[in-house]
Length: 120
Figure 1 (tube, helix red, strand yellow):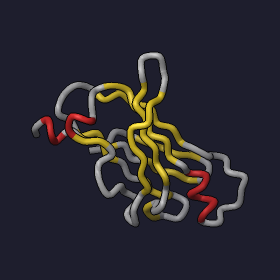
Figure 2 (cartoon, helix red, strand yellow):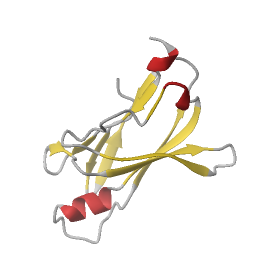
Figure 3 (cartoon, helix red, strand yellow):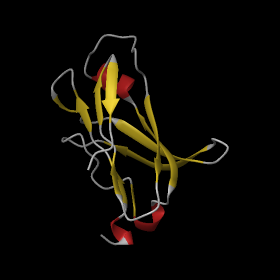
Protein backbone atom coordinates (compact mmCIF):
# COMPACT_ATOMS: atom_id res chain seq x y z
CA UNK A 1 0.00 0.00 0.00
CA UNK A 2 1.38 3.44 -0.93
CA UNK A 3 0.55 6.87 0.49
CA UNK A 4 -1.83 7.38 -2.41
CA UNK A 5 -3.82 4.35 -1.17
CA UNK A 6 -4.74 6.15 2.04
CA UNK A 7 -8.50 6.71 1.95
CA UNK A 8 -11.69 7.12 3.98
CA UNK A 9 -14.84 5.21 3.02
CA UNK A 10 -18.20 4.45 4.62
CA UNK A 11 -21.42 2.58 4.02
CA UNK A 12 -24.81 2.56 5.73
CA UNK A 13 -27.09 -0.40 6.40
CA UNK A 14 -30.76 0.18 7.26
CA UNK A 15 -31.48 -2.43 9.94
CA UNK A 16 -35.21 -1.66 10.04
CA UNK A 17 -35.79 -2.57 6.42
CA UNK A 18 -32.91 -5.04 6.09
CA UNK A 19 -31.18 -3.33 3.17
CA UNK A 20 -28.55 -0.76 2.25
CA UNK A 21 -29.54 2.81 3.10
CA UNK A 22 -29.73 4.39 -0.35
CA UNK A 23 -30.04 8.16 -0.56
CA UNK A 24 -28.72 9.11 2.89
CA UNK A 25 -26.85 12.42 3.07
CA UNK A 26 -23.46 12.37 4.79
CA UNK A 27 -21.18 15.27 5.71
CA UNK A 28 -17.54 14.96 6.71
CA UNK A 29 -15.72 17.55 8.84
CA UNK A 30 -12.12 18.04 9.91
CA UNK A 31 -11.87 18.77 13.63
CA UNK A 32 -9.32 21.32 14.81
CA UNK A 33 -7.54 21.18 18.16
CA UNK A 34 -10.06 23.64 19.62
CA UNK A 35 -12.97 21.48 18.41
CA UNK A 36 -13.92 23.72 15.49
CA UNK A 37 -15.36 21.84 12.49
CA UNK A 38 -14.33 22.57 8.91
CA UNK A 39 -16.34 20.96 6.08
CA UNK A 40 -14.26 18.41 4.16
CA UNK A 41 -16.78 16.51 2.00
CA UNK A 42 -20.47 15.87 1.38
CA UNK A 43 -22.09 12.94 -0.36
CA UNK A 44 -25.23 10.84 -0.71
CA UNK A 45 -25.20 7.05 -0.49
CA UNK A 46 -25.87 5.07 -3.65
CA UNK A 47 -28.18 2.04 -4.11
CA UNK A 48 -25.68 -0.13 -2.21
CA UNK A 49 -25.60 2.27 0.77
CA UNK A 50 -22.05 3.25 -0.20
CA UNK A 51 -20.42 6.37 -1.59
CA UNK A 52 -19.43 6.33 -5.24
CA UNK A 53 -15.89 7.44 -4.32
CA UNK A 54 -13.83 7.71 -1.13
CA UNK A 55 -14.77 10.69 1.03
CA UNK A 56 -11.08 11.60 1.14
CA UNK A 57 -8.07 9.94 -0.46
CA UNK A 58 -4.31 10.28 -0.70
CA UNK A 59 -2.76 13.48 0.64
CA UNK A 60 -6.17 15.09 1.25
CA UNK A 61 -6.82 12.45 3.96
CA UNK A 62 -4.32 13.82 6.47
CA UNK A 63 -3.86 12.37 9.95
CA UNK A 64 -6.09 14.03 12.54
CA UNK A 65 -9.59 14.17 13.95
CA UNK A 66 -12.70 13.88 11.76
CA UNK A 67 -16.45 13.73 12.19
CA UNK A 68 -18.91 11.98 9.91
CA UNK A 69 -22.50 13.20 10.27
CA UNK A 70 -25.20 10.92 8.88
CA UNK A 71 -28.64 12.45 8.21
CA UNK A 72 -30.73 9.54 9.49
CA UNK A 73 -33.89 11.51 10.40
CA UNK A 74 -34.55 12.76 6.87
CA UNK A 75 -33.65 9.32 5.46
CA UNK A 76 -36.24 7.48 7.57
CA UNK A 77 -38.84 10.26 7.11
CA UNK A 78 -38.42 9.82 3.35
CA UNK A 79 -39.32 6.15 3.79
CA UNK A 80 -42.50 7.04 5.67
CA UNK A 81 -41.29 6.11 9.16
CA UNK A 82 -43.60 8.11 11.47
CA UNK A 83 -42.00 10.97 13.36
CA UNK A 84 -40.86 12.89 15.11
CA UNK A 85 -37.47 11.29 14.61
CA UNK A 86 -35.66 9.99 17.69
CA UNK A 87 -32.34 10.20 15.82
CA UNK A 88 -32.05 13.21 13.55
CA UNK A 89 -28.29 13.02 12.96
CA UNK A 90 -25.68 10.44 13.90
CA UNK A 91 -22.23 12.00 14.41
CA UNK A 92 -19.20 9.72 14.54
CA UNK A 93 -15.97 11.39 15.63
CA UNK A 94 -12.73 9.48 15.11
CA UNK A 95 -9.00 10.01 14.75
CA UNK A 96 -6.98 8.94 11.71
CA UNK A 97 -3.40 8.02 12.61
CA UNK A 98 -0.21 8.47 10.59
CA UNK A 99 0.49 5.85 7.98
CA UNK A 100 -0.88 4.44 4.78
CA UNK A 101 -4.17 3.17 6.08
CA UNK A 102 -7.65 2.63 4.74
CA UNK A 103 -10.28 3.79 7.22
CA UNK A 104 -13.74 2.33 6.64
CA UNK A 105 -16.43 3.59 9.02
CA UNK A 106 -19.74 1.76 8.51
CA UNK A 107 -23.03 2.72 10.13
CA UNK A 108 -25.74 0.20 11.01
CA UNK A 109 -28.85 2.20 11.83
CA UNK A 110 -32.54 2.08 12.72
CA UNK A 111 -34.79 5.02 13.65
CA UNK A 112 -34.02 4.30 17.33
CA UNK A 113 -30.39 3.23 17.54
CA UNK A 114 -27.12 2.66 15.72
CA UNK A 115 -23.78 0.89 15.81
CA UNK A 116 -20.46 1.56 14.15
CA UNK A 117 -16.96 0.12 14.07
CA UNK A 118 -13.69 0.48 12.20
CA UNK A 119 -14.13 -1.81 9.24
CA UNK A 120 -11.71 -2.98 6.60
